[in-house]
Image 1 (cartoon, rainbow, N blue to C red):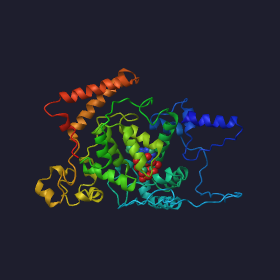
Image 2 (tube, rainbow, N blue to C red):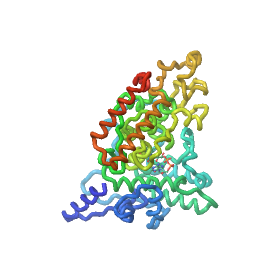
Image 3 (cartoon, helix red, strand yellow):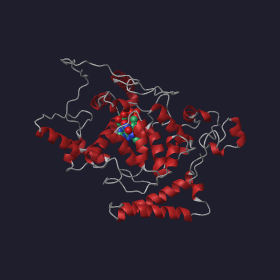
Image 4 (tube, rainbow, N blue to C red):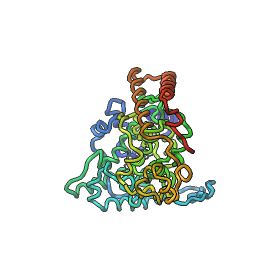
Length: 420
Ligand SMILES: Cc1cc2nc3c(=O)[nH]c(=O)nc-3n(C[C@H](O)[C@H](O)[C@H](O)COP(=O)(O)OP(=O)(O)OC[C@H]3O[C@@H](n4cnc5c(N)ncnc54)[C@H](O)[C@@H]3O)c2cc1C
């Protein structure tokens, strides 16, 4: 990205075109940070913070206004086309995203979040409840930042103003300012890393022989993994286009290194299409993180698709809302409905395997297999100092298959059972 920007600027300059490229989508200029770091992007959040320091420009809480449209000659000023005019046929959808677009709505949301100064001062991202959907545990300003309806610099300045008026406040990485700095971090690394959005040719990405199981991928995408916590999150993604950060953690871990061992690029593509805050740098950065391909390497730490959600929402209200087929399932079984006796399933009007799928994999077995595969892939990357070829990956994939076949008495299909 870094090189292509420079190439466009050089090309335009050579043709006598004045090039003006202000940086305003981010708080810092990624190119400055990379230059300060000797031409390479910092690969840890802490080193990013040290390099970034405080923003150097003067921040203003005064909003600027677009100048009026000048003389447009004989050109006609057109209205924003409707969806119909753009060729989208109206589709039946029973629930739409509750988040409205536009700058006024962005500023209203920002004011509403910041009006609770205690909440802003005490904000600690890891303590938020990913199952809170009536009042989400975070600001839900990401779609507005993504589309430029809200300036990250204005958001940052408003947060700093709140901090000035409180005795104590939390700090990065967990604070709200810390969240904006995560955004800056990923923009900087993405800007300075060739092939950031791919495994192949990406120097900061571990080379891992992920599988190409389209059936498992489809079950994940279509919210029929049989794990209600995972499926409810995927329904929220499809209907709302937004989920809490830890909910994204859960489903990304489940798809990749946690359970299904499917390539992170496939999950990234589905997020890219369905998220209303879909952002190239942040989405790729977080998929690299969650799949333990870069930034974060503790592949033994896997989110349980059962107990993680239950910790926040023991009654399963979030699941009942997004997966109404399970609304009458007693809370003892809502995270593992396949364990409910048939009489309970009948009473709840939800027979597992008919009305709601059985689990596509057995979590305990699948997650242990994933750990083993990750261990072997990491060892390969270490041995070859990151220079892993296609052939090396093919060999390791073959070894994974042989290891699975050796694991009797359970045949592979039973361990990786796809019910529907
Ligand atoms: C697999 C995966 C994919 C993701 N894809 C995207 C994406 O495409 N677009 C996107 O904006 N966020 C993405 N995120 C990051 C994060 O989940 C969202 O930014 C956050 O949930 C948005 O909600 P919020 O505005 O309420 O966040 P808040 O907690 O209120 O944070 C305020 C702002 O800080 C920024 N921010 C917060 N967390 C992160 C983070 N981990 N990385 C970078 N910036 C962050 C966002 O701009 C956010 O709007 C992804 C996370 C994961 C695990």
